[in-house]
Each structure stands twice: as structure tokens, then as C-alpha cells.
Length: 610
Image 1 (cartoon, one colour):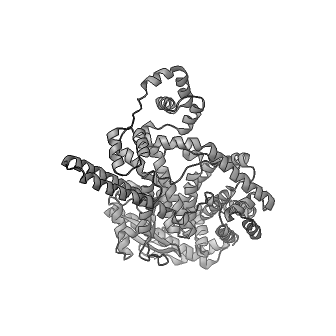
Image 2: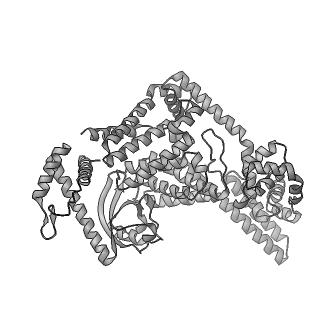
Image 3: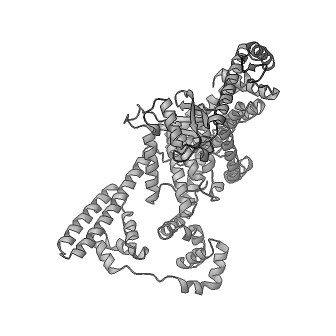
């Protein structure tokens, strides 16, 4: 942020305090224009009251007057013609605001029309490279501006997907990268391949109904790719991915969002990107998101992190997130000209930052002892730099995670089995299934009871204790594998034992059985071999049977099986592409380097002291 921006913030606030309107007399006359002598007098008065130079005050007053007059002209034009004027701020990683422009568009037009007009102004051939952001939302190209609550005189943030010369493929623009990421995440989630396992802070799994689970997995996939982009300092790309994730999160009505910190982190990361892109046009959205983040942290961690401290003691790596929240709150307060509050919040952030700083030589010592760098940093931060305590902290944390995962192994297996069988409306909570099975009830009875009681554990238990005979009577009879289907799948080269399990698990549904079977293969090489077996077995089967109807049936099954294997290969490739720049460190989001935070803190404290 420049010095003149700091001056404008203070001058604007004083104008509002005094109720001075620079577009009215005596500062402006419609038939004469701006009255420089009055602006000079006002600049002198503001200089005295704000302890700023007269020249800077005059520059700020002139700029604010010009902006107000442009808005008045745009309002008049909108009333007369219906054309809305948008103040468009084009941003990029290197410069922050690259340029400002005005674009006019009818509010009944689709978002793609606004994209086209911006592209035309910027002399871009492809409007799809234009991403418009309004009030923290990406403007949908296929909905009207009115439907998306856009207004005349609104400020828009625009990101243009440039060609990235540093990438291996110089033609791979940001627009294409994001499109491919979205396609890959969707393919992985729909293939049921394990993209993420959602856990609480102690490593216990969190289970959700399938539809909510899909939305959340996609959101978390976008978040991971956004964090990878942030590490490369590609904040524009990260922001678009985070806003996509935000949209997915908001489709979920589950209480899950209130029990974990994922949604808080999305909002925190979005505001971080705003700051790194030096963009203040989204200030109201930044305030809203930080409020959401603070409320979410309170729910997840307790007031002043007391719930987390009760669980983990003062050794909370999550303190780094709280520090970043306080820093960003201080920055937003500064831009709102709430300078005393901003100073207080930045002081809190500064104190937390000093507590989180660790000695580089201590990190090196722990790394030489065989610990990962992120473990070393988090351990030292949690233990105030004490080397011995940090080692104990690392081992204790590893052990707790391992114990939680061992405890939940049975729940995860049950969840995997239920996911294959049940639709969203039939979903039952795997944790409840395991709890009731540990009391001695059979798996099928437990599932039936939970379905009947809408996952109410106590009601399901009462039902099992009082009416288990009725439940047992209504259970569907187990089907053995159909011998004809078993033979057909064996002909295609599938293992007999696994084929039998697949058919019994899916109640002899051929489509689902094929889905089950192709998921067994763990890599591309195995899938290629299975494709060869299917093709070879099909040739033999068709050659040995001259009946047209049989040949046609085998051919159809072959095509279906090959299609499913190819789809699985595509999802496997998508999974590999997705993981190319993703760290295996699940606590990476807590391992903040803190260098940028230190620079931002110093910059804004300097502005406050000027």
C-alpha cells in the first residue's frame, strides 16, 4: 500500500465525519466545475487536524472529488439509459492493481456479456480468460447480473488468466489449469477414489451423507490445490480456487462445518489472498469472512482456544492461525480508519508472532535427528523453543494420531461397505453401526434399525432391544452370486473369488459388480493388464459361439467392462495429477513460515505511526 492510500483513508473518514460533500457547493458548481480555492482551504484545514502535508491532503481531496463526480454521472446515465457502470480493478500477482477501468453493461445481461465487454476493453481475444469477482463471489457467466445482485457503480475485481512462462508448458494458462483441476477433482470424487479422509483435530474420522460428502470432498480438493498455488505465490489462481471451494462448502447444511475448522480456513485464506493481491475493493467481504472465521474458531476451539488448550495444553500449533486472523483483522480495521482498534489488534498479532518464532538452528538440529522440518517447527512453536519438550511433543502427537486411526479402523471399513450399498436417503452413520455392533447386535439388524430411526442412536437401540424379531423378519434375504453372471464375468478375465464377492455385495447387479471389480486394481499397470484380459477373453468367447444373440450380448458386456476400466484409468491419472504438488503433510496448513506476516505487520504499524 502506498503512502497516498494511507492519506486518502484518513481524509475520506474526516469528510464523512464532518458531512462534507465535495460534489456540492462551495467545492463544486455544475456550470463551473471544481473550485480550487475552496479545495485549497479544505486541504489546509485537514493538514492541521490530521498532521499531514497540505499537498497530500489536496491530492487526496481532488481524487475523492473526481471519484464522487464519476459516480454521480454514472447514476444519471443509469437512470436515463439503464446501463450500469462498473469500476473494474484488474489485479495480478506482481503489481496488485494492474489498472483500473470503467465498463458499462445492462444489469439484465448475462455474466458472459460483462466478461466480453471487459475483454474488449483490455484487448483480449478470449473472454473466458476473464474472471469477475463481486462481493466475494465469482460472477456466473450464464446468469444475469441482476440475479447475482450486481448494482450500478459497483466495484469489481478482475483476474485475467495470463500465459505462465515459468511453467513447463508455456501455453498452459491459468484458465486451463483451473479447468483441469476442477475436472480432476470431480473425476476423483465421483470415482469414489480416496481423495481425503475427513477427520477432527484428534484424527477421528468424520462421516457424512453421500451428497454432503461429495460437496465437501470437492471443496477440500479445491482448497488443497489453492494452498499449493499460495506456496508458489500464485495468489490470483489460489483465490479463484478458494472461491470455488467456498461455493461448495455453502451448499452443505451439515453441522460438520461447525465442528471442524475447514470452512474457517477457507475464509481466512481468501482474505489472505485479497491482502497479497493488494486489493481493498473487497473490504466488506473481507470483514464478513473474518467474522465467519472468528465465530468458527470459537465453535471449534472454544473462547480464546480454551477447548483446544484443555485437549492439548498450551502446545497448540493452531495458534498460528489465530495470529494470522488477528493480523488480518488489524489490516481491515486500518482500511476502515479505525486506527486505535487496528493498532491494538496488530499489537496482539505481533505478540503472538514473537511467541511463534523459532530458532532456525534448533529446527536444523531436529531435522538432523530424523524429524521432518514441519514437525520440528510445530514442535518448537508448541514448546516455546525447548528442544527436549519439542521431541516429546512430536512423539506424543504421532502416538495420538496412530491410536485414533487404529480405533477408527473398523468404522472406516463399515463406511466403505455402506457407501457401496446405500444412496443418500438410506445413509447410516458408520460410528453408530460400530457402537451398536459392539453391544452384540448383528450388522444387518443394526443398519435396518438406524435407517428406521433416521440415525437416532438411542431410538435405534430401543428398537433393537424391544422389536428385533420384527426387524429380522423384514430383512431382505441374502442372494448368492448368480451362476450365469459369475460365468460371464469370469469369461472376461476377472478373478472368480472376487467376482463372487462383487455379485453378492451388489445383489447381482452387473453394473455395480463391474464398478466393484475395477476398483480393486490399484495402479495403471494392473488396469492395462485387465483390459488385455477382457479383450482376449472376449475374442475367444465370440469365436467359440456362432449364435448372433450370444455374440451381441458378450460384445455389449465387453464394451461396458472396457468403458469402466478406461474410466477408472482416467480417474487414476486424475488422482496422480492432483497429487503432483500436494504435500503428504496433513498439518501443512499450520506450518506457516511467518515471513510475510512479519513484513505485513511491520508495514501497517509503520503506516499507523506516520
